[in-house]
Length: 175
Image (cartoon, rainbow, N blue to C red; front, side, top):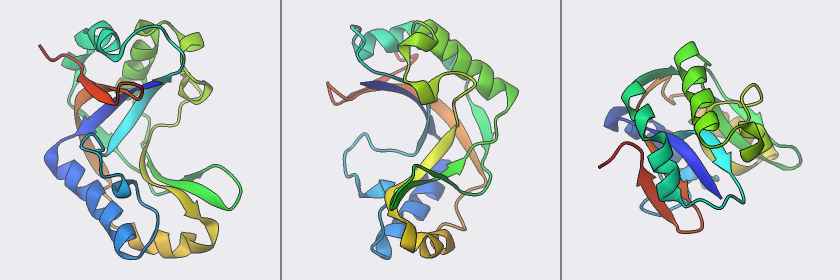
């Protein structure tokens, strides 16, 4: 599996990490609990599963899109994904024309909607910044109090491809 992600400038990254840390300090699930060097706040543009290309090849296919950055992204409140006793807690990104056009072009360059997983298909995609996975529903009120200061704007400055099989990140537009 591979994902194409927008990552943020230092100030935006730090703002999201403060929300992650607030959850951790209270003993709640947080995206910040993943200690890997590649873990960073981001917005996922596309997710591919079962393709025969390597992450480096995807990054090459997308290299011409790096010039569309930076993008200023507005966040709006909190959204929950999933059902059952645990949910994904995230900040939804307000869809702007430039973000939507970029996401559509990413999907097109990667082979079209049939190559990406269903929730990343254009017109079904919900851009967001994940704060926590597997948040117990009985602790949602507590979590919401803690992440109330999450940023309302972030600045996406880089695009990358995360290759889960290789456990590597490939910068888009890097030499």
